[in-house]
Length: 234
Image (cartoon, rainbow, N blue to C red; front, side, top):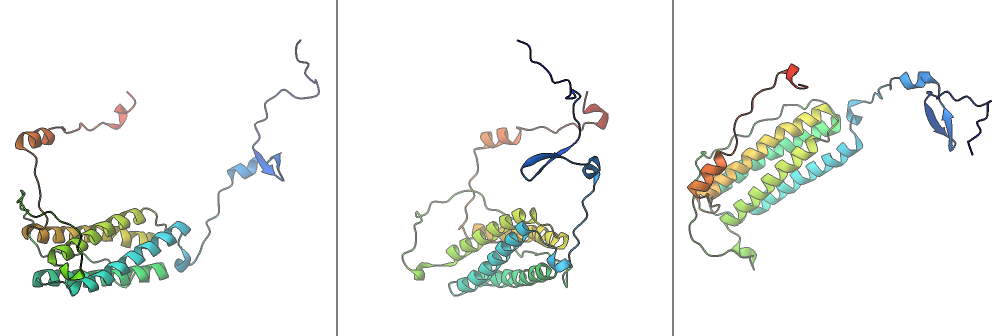
């Protein structure tokens, strides 16, 4: 049996936009579809998204924790070179912390721009492994030494660099985003400085692949040829 169509119902397709109102599907005027959203202007101190607020608190809390831990490490350091490095990094991070607090609370350009951390170590890495005793957890705080302290510092610098990189991607305030993003290379530099200190003292040994394996890995990729704009769809 064929379906019977009501002659009073138009069979032409309805192209008007629809919306939900009071649980029912309602037609909306075509003009609403073309309306542009009006920017919600807020004062600079309030120009932060919700996700950004949470990430900013995590950033500031992490920096505060890093500064507190650096102070705790000082009592265990014997090597003056390591102590000088700790003081230098602590001073730089304190200044950065104050810059972020200022930017976060005002939403405006800070008193001074983000500074650049300059390490004091050279760039020479000692490659190869030397035999040593297996490591295991300490049983007393008296066992904490320069090797372990520098390892703690390295872990903090690396984790903070990662945190800043992820947080910068969630920032909506342009000034705070720039401060956070520009700080990532500084923590990378601090981590590299600590690594070089550990490496030259044999705390951080760097293994290498066999020459044949390394050569094969190094030659696994070739340069790419740039594609002109008119070639993309060919």
